[in-house]
Length: 205
Image (cartoon, rainbow, N blue to C red; front, side, top):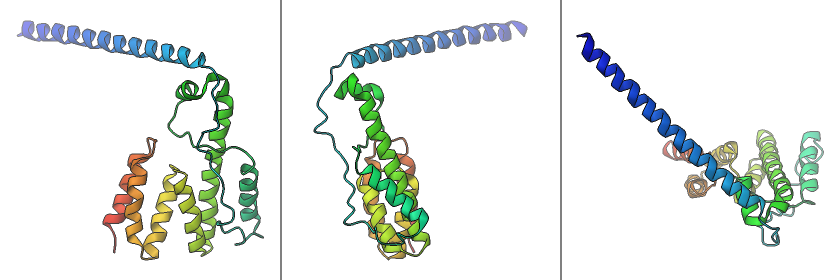
């Protein structure tokens, strides 16, 4: 009885060694491919950034006069005004390697700063909208959140609060309209946002 067990154990060990070797081989190939691509990206020459999808902050349509004397709200306003003087581009889901391949390695620091500006923008919009919503300025919060969605933000809280507002306003059909937007987001959070929106839709009163 011991021999069959021993033989099975040997077979298992051989199989395990094979799988480990195969996994290491795949990892080595993947690593080699990455560094080849990175080397190509680092040698890519500077390209024009004129055709980037720059984001402009529409101050004329945003509720800039609501609670503008509030210190917290005023800070959000100041952040937006500062951002409006700098380039803002959404590069969510695009790696630095891909950015260098598309626009040239010498531009990577600029592109990273543009994306950082975008991250600050959508976080500020979310915080500002939440502050106005909590102060019972629902329509104004909705305007801010809809602009954030137009920029293709991947902040889950933005879609959740906007869906909450749509439900409160009896505009449940607008919740469904957010789903294809969320599905097209270039982010790992897309699936979570879509699931949350579908749950909102399925639980409509």
